[in-house]
Image (cartoon, rainbow, N blue to C red; front, top):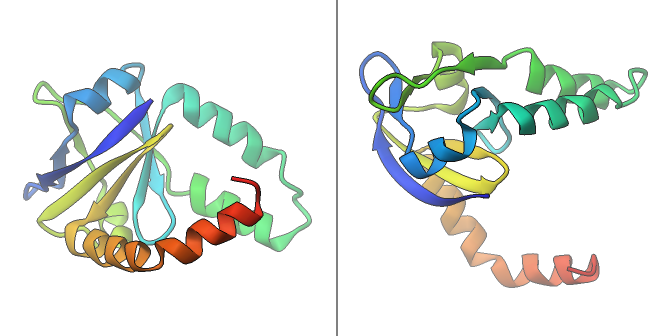
Amino acid sequence: MILGEFKHSLDIKGRVAVPAKFREKIEAGAIITRGLDKCLFMFGAKEWETLVQKLMSLPLAQSNSRAFVRLMLAGATDVAFDNQGRILIPEYLRKYAGLKKQVILTGLYNRIEIWDSAEWETYKTKTESSSDEIAEKLGELGI
């Protein structure tokens, strides 16, 4: 289980330190790709394989399915931890997520999200202000 929220700096080469707490959960390797809501997703190898199998089962004839599979898979890349626990985020992914100097790494059970710090604060503030409405909708789903 990957949980928590950490603030780190992106260095000039596009590297960011991944908290040891997160690295322990994805020792076997990690994959980083475009996420949703203007962030990046990082999965451990096992979780990534589970996701890919689900994506490949989506109907090829539906344009939304094809678009989502492309979003997730076309930009995906393996990342390796250096001796200091950093990963190099490719430039095209940094651009996609608008990553600048400060980034936030959040643990969401089976994945890590990487956000530009300002984007994360905006998203979090918006979500927190509508938490009652969100909770009500989830209640309708039985959660």
